[in-house]
Image (cartoon, rainbow, N blue to C red):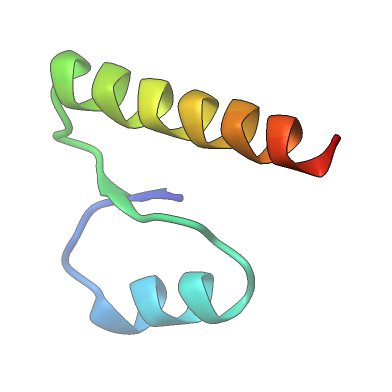
Length: 51
C-alpha cells in the first residue's frame, strides 16, 4: 500500500485488511527495488517448499 505517511489509522486499516506492507510516497527507487526483490525471493522459496 502506498500512502503519504501522515495518517496512522490509514496504515492500520490497510494492514488489518490484508496489506503486506505500507510505503510512504517518498520511498526511494533503491528501497522499492530491495523490497520487490525480497518479496520475489520469498515467493520463490515458498513455491519450492510446496513441491
